[in-house]
Length: 330
Image (cartoon, rainbow, N blue to C red; front, side, top):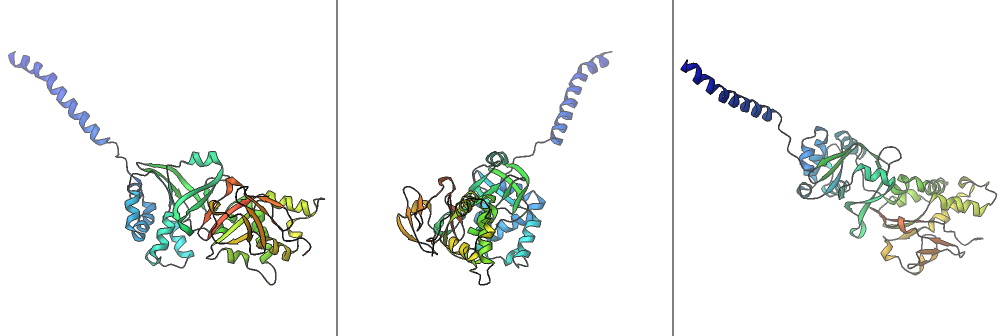
């Protein structure tokens, strides 16, 4: 009887120990994963292995930077995106890409701050700055549009958004975002589609001025870019009946008009001069304080304050609300 009595006293203790060990075992099987930073997250994602390899190949400092405190927003191209980038640019492998070029391209995928997809969708469209730099050390711009998903510079679409890391956010994208030219920004922004059509019309002449290839070149250029509304207003000005389309305007005239919108150099909004300024087409008068451009006919175009300093790798774009014209009658 004493043995049974002692056993009954010990049994609850045994059950408590067994129960504790069982709970401990369950906890071991359900350990919460430790949070990871951006680099660690990329390393743990098989479809971002090319991005990791590119970061290491380009500049070891990039890995160190993205291991830092941040916060950063990284647009992370997939392996397929990197392969297409290599193929399209004639590279057999990642190591064939010049280190400085690869570094600049990767920096063009990094935005300072923690930018969520909801921030972009709420804005609808617009420009942000990346960590890459252009002429004068100015940070390159990045155009985003959320009409159909989230797309950057008109070429790279988000396929997986808002992957959280301890030092920022990753958005996986389906294309590598190259270093943009002033033409690339015109092509990306639907509000500048009339400018693109005008450039194409001018270049379609038998003796083409090659404006698109020129403005895609080294530069630097400063482009005062008329919006679609500006071109619509010009057509109404030329023909109040509304029967004239952009394609009806003589192509040589279109060429002459467009040249009045290009100035040599990378002239950012804080460096816009006042006085007579020479364009590729002729002289205009600019007021830096009023942000206006007066053409040879006395017509005044306003530089749109919210759309200045769109920085490309080969120049800068400022949007304007009225098309600049050469001297009428010449």
